[in-house]
View 1 (cartoon, rainbow, N blue to C red):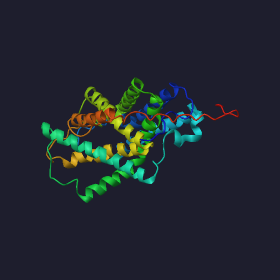
View 2: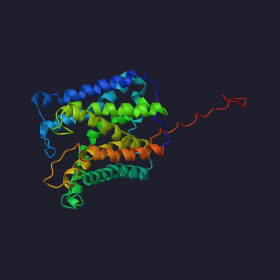
View 3: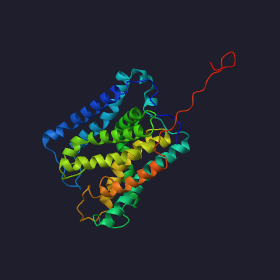
View 4: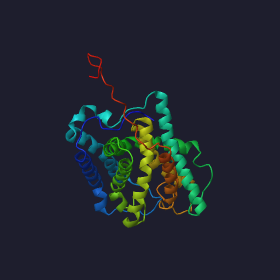
Length: 313
């Protein structure tokens, strides 16, 4: 784990910055999704894809948190404007070997948790495996890698906001209750930011809002500590971005590709954002918490400079 503190490098108003950030991020999401909301777009089938208009709106929405973070740092917290990358932890983990390992873990963990969730679903009788070996094919793997890399800039748009800006502001260098509240508050904010897409059946096709919104709250509250752990262990937001991209591309595709073609896909009962995934992620987050991997690194002690007389200056 890195010894770099998450404390923002400059004194800031503790509430004003995060509140302005949330207002801008939420406004950006609603504005970006408004054409789909006005047109009455609804997603009712878990196997249905998205057309070009939907993809454009989603892409613009995903950039909103990063834009909100940049604007807040520049105009609300101006002392950090000259160190934007430092403030948002937008740097490669060092040395190079550590960066490779961090990125590998960021992909392996979501894939592993997805497999665990699918096996839980199979044991419960809600998931049926299809033809074995489909996801092991080179074609599928190459397609997923390409898809993840192409969409990576959009996930920077999200995680520069949630992991780069909001979580460190809420957590400061807190311990105990303050740290738990930072995880919960960021997870809830992350979930409710998706409200426009939830109203259109984006994450839970065919489900009413009073089912999809609570389900998303549980999913994001459990997923966020996993992304935060990736950020903490590397000292960089990049592994968190990669992990989020893997969850939203590779994990979602695995649920479809591994399933029996005749199986009706219901994300509430399948994959990481269904109840089997809650069990898988809940177990992993519990392990991280019990072993101290979700704690913030302690700040390095301040060195005292000796004065002319040999005492502390």
